[in-house]
Each structure stands twice: as C-alpha cells, then as structure tokens.
Length: 83
Image 1 (tube, rainbow, N blue to C red):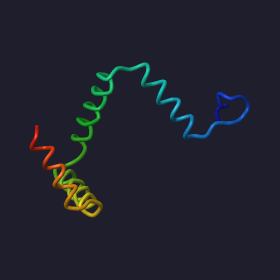
Image 2 (cartoon, rainbow, N blue to C red; image 1 turned 180 degrees about the horizontal axis):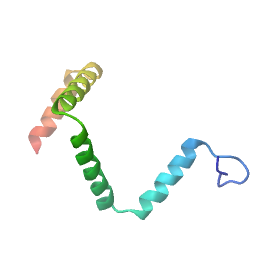
Image 3 (spheres, helix red, strand yellow; image 1 turned 120 degrees about the horizontal axis):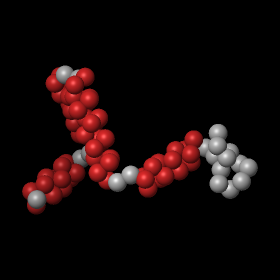
Image 4 (tube, rainbow, N blue to C red; image 1 turned 135 degrees about the horizontal axis):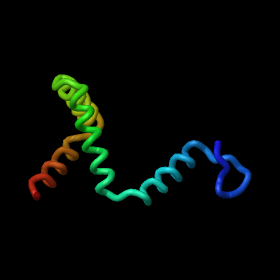
C-alpha cells in the first residue's frame, strides 16, 4: 500500500483509488472520456450478440421494477414528456 498524505499511515485501497481517479480526471477532458467510452462500446458490441443485450436489458428492467413503485415511473414519464 502507498503511504497516505498525512504521513506514515498506509492509505486504504479506496483512498488510493479515489486519489488516482481525481488525478486522472484533472489530466483529461470530457472529450477524452467520451472517446474511450465510445471505443469501449464498439469493442463490447463486437464481442456480444443481440441476445446478450436483450438479456441484460430484461434483467435491468426487472431489477428496476422490483426496486421502484408506480410513482417512480409516473415521474420519469412526466420528465420525459417535457423534453
């Protein structure tokens, strides 16, 4: 583990990850992150079938349905209708 900024105490993985993420974010622009996201999406699309995306969409929909009530869906529908 790396030493913490406060001296001899060792920092946790969480703290090291947070500091590393903050340093990386300072170095790169929004466009950089959009570009690597686009590249990752294309690579993933090449390695997975349509059925893969249908299955993860179904699972995500079920999980959302199980964790939200009708008011949630009314609210997001209302917001979507405003655009």
